[in-house]
Image 1 (cartoon, rainbow, N blue to C red):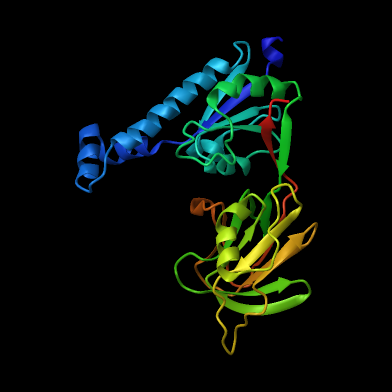
Image 2: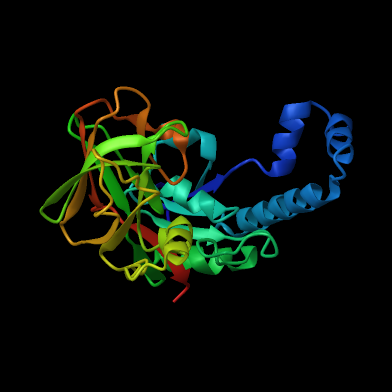
Length: 302
């Protein structure tokens, strides 16, 4: 394979808790003092950091020598230019895959779990030493790929974003969110703690918590099923707001529409990344439905 036609492997990482602590306190001694005063130990964070560093060394050694390489931190994802044929390798916790997914357009993603005792591995199921097999299989189109559904939120002014797990719509603070909800030919004015619209991937997290707590009969979608589930959080019944439309499944080309009645503080964001929020002004319409983009997650080396 010539270098010009060689695949490019882009490794995606985020700072470990150990690195974050050092950034905050400046020195190792200061970080240790901060934790020990609170009855905590730095050793646990050092262990996670060491496992991450070791995993990166293994993955780097697994990349064929004539392939191109790139490396991007989570904080740089919105500025990184991905190429159509890139192979993405996320080394870290499951949320890192969700962070990267919204910036991709069909590229395959290999999730590497550096610390199985700390990370569940739903989206990062592979040990570091399987990286070479998975890379070769992905480049030769023999890998088993799971196409996971994503959520798209789009404002009437063209602003929008994608999310892998869920979209949150509500007030930026703990105030009630006020809006009109359009769903399945019905409309209701609501005051609530906001609403979430979840994919099948997100149905193992926040959506499942709500689903279980309220004893919902809504069937949560699977990760590859072209469906979403939505839940209104703590809808408030009053003379001006209702509680009839509080959950449902969004299938196929259907969408949920939210019309903001907040003069300030209305927001929507995906996968818990508040920094990427869009603002909902009074009267603006937000449509949430299935995205055309999918996350192509590498499940097996074929």
